Image (tube, rainbow, N blue to C red):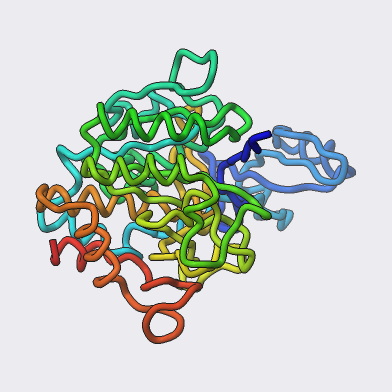
Length: 364
C-alpha cells in the first residue's frame, strides 16, 4: 500500500514582548487589585475589565498621580525589521520593488480583502478535494503572502517586494495540513498556467520524513518530477527547511534544485529549531515576523515558514531587474551573494548565509 505523507505549515508559536504605555484623553489605563476597584470607581475611574487577580481601569490623570497607581502597559508583537535585515529596502531606492512580477504561494490560501494584499492578489485556485475558493480559512497563507508583498499600510509590516503580485494556490486545509498529491497538482498548474517567477512553499514534513543528506529525491519521485518540470518552465522553487532542527530538512525543501531556506533571528543567529542539513541553501529572518492575518489585522509569527517568503520576494526583485534570468542563474546569484554566517563558507546550519537582496539584485 502506498504511504500518504502528511504535510503541514512550518510555524513556531509567536512571541509577544515589547510594551508601551497607552494613554486616553485626560485619563490613563491602570492596573488595580480587586479590593481597590470600588474605591477607584468612586474617585472617577471606570472599570474596563475585572479579573480574578487584577482589574483594568481607566482613571483621571490626577487620581493616577495622587495615588501612585500602576500603569497598565500595552503589549505589541515584536517586529524583527526583517526588510532591513536582508537589505530589501535598499533595493527599493534603486527602483525595484517587485512591480510586474508574481510569486505563486502554495499554502492555506489568502485573505483577498486584507488592506495590505487586496491589490496584489493575482488570482488563485484551490486544489483540495471539494473546495471551490482559495480564500484563507487558516491564516498561514495570508501571513506568508504579506511577508512577500504587503503594501505597508502598517509600515512595520511592509513586504520585501511590496509591488509584486501573489498568486495563491490553496493546498492546505483550515487546520494547516494537506497531502503532496494536491501540492504536485498545484505545481504543475502553476508551471503551465501562471506567469510566476517563483513557487513559494512554506510547508513541509516532520520526522521521520526529514533528511540530513544532499537530497531526498527518491522518497517522492512524483514530487521531484513536478518540481523539475516547473523549473524547466522558468519557475524558481523556494521551500522551507522545516522546524525539526538537527533532525534534518523536511520535504519539499530536501528535493534537489529547490532553494531551501532556514531561519535566523534578528541578530542573524540560526534558531535551534531551523532545519539543518546538506540540502540547505540560505537562511532568512524567521523569528517574530510581523505580517498580515485574517480579519485585516497583523501578528508576529515565527518559523521557517516566515523565512521562506523573504527569499521568494528577493527572486521577484531580481526578476524585475532582469527578467531573462533562468532558475539556475537565480539560485547561483542568491547563494554567491549571500552574507556568510556561521563557519566560513558553506555549512549545514546557515547554508551559504543570509539572503542579501541588494547584492543579489546588483548581480542580476
